[in-house]
Each structure stands twice: as structure tokens, then as C-alpha cells.
Image 1: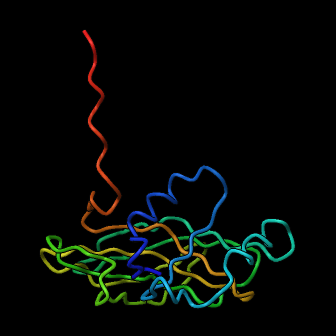
Image 2: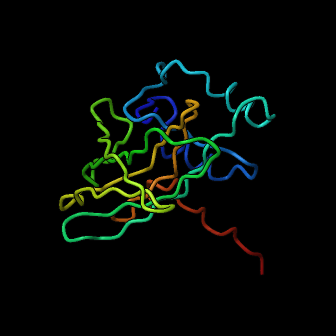
Amino acid sequence: GTNDRFFLMPLVLETWRHIPSPKRLVMLPNDNHSQVGNEEFPLRYFNSVFGAAPAFPEATNPTVKPDGANLVLTSQVTGPSKLTKVDFCVMCMPRDKFAPNHADTKWTLYPATQAGDDWTATVPGPPPGEQLIAYLHAEDETGAKVSSDTVEVPEFPKWRGLPEPPPAPTTP
């Protein structure tokens, strides 16, 4: 869940980004650690990997294009089954008090529309001094769900994980 108090979303994403094998990401908007929809994601996903269930869809990282005071979010979703719901999940918070896992954090869902391979939604840009985080969330007719990685406007290095450690000292 996006509001998980025990596994903070930026840290989970940083871990997920470094997994070198095939993987899928599912982030349920406005869900917490103990709920997570009470769904059997791991079993369903592993069954799909071993061919015992239809494959999960895949989502590309969203891109952002400014459009006046709005932002156009675009991502692609592919998979063997028909998509039944595609949304962009969006949240804004003050940059100086950015806490995406706070209980009061609310993600707003913007339905995406399909044009060719692209799924897009137009969302309001962040107010001055605020940070916008967005990701795509899709579900197919088999009930498989997938999320994309996030996009941030303006870019926010803290959201992307911990800073790089300083270089190791060299000996003369």
C-alpha cells in the first residue's frame, strides 16, 4: 500500500529498482500495511510466472509533458489480457514537509485514456512549493494488477532513495 507505515514507499521503490530479475510492481493507492486489499498477489504472480495463470501486465515508467498549468502523464501497459481499469495515482505535498506515508496522505486517481499504445491523463500541476508524485495503476480482466514506477514534478532526489555515498578515500 502507498500509505504503509512500516515499508516506506520511496525505500520499497529503491529496493524494487535494484532487483535484476523479471518483476512486477503493485502499489495500492491509499492502502496501508495491514490491509493491502487482502489479495493473494504473490501466489497469483508466481502462478503466472510458471504458466499456471495468465501473465501479469507490464507498465512503463510514466513520462510528463507540461500543458499550461497542467501535466500530461503518459505510460504504456502491455499484457495478454484486456485491461479493465487504468488510472494515474497522483499526490501533492509540501516539499519541505514531504511525508508520502503519512496517514492523512491521499492519492487522487485520474482515469487514463488510451490512444494507440499510450495511456494518458491530464492532471493539475503542483502548486508552488509542492511536490507531485504520480504512477500508473492498471488491472486486467483476470484481476491481475500492475503499477509503474513513479515520476516526480519537480524532480525530488530525496524521493528517489538515499543519496550516493561519498567516494572511498584513496591512498597516495
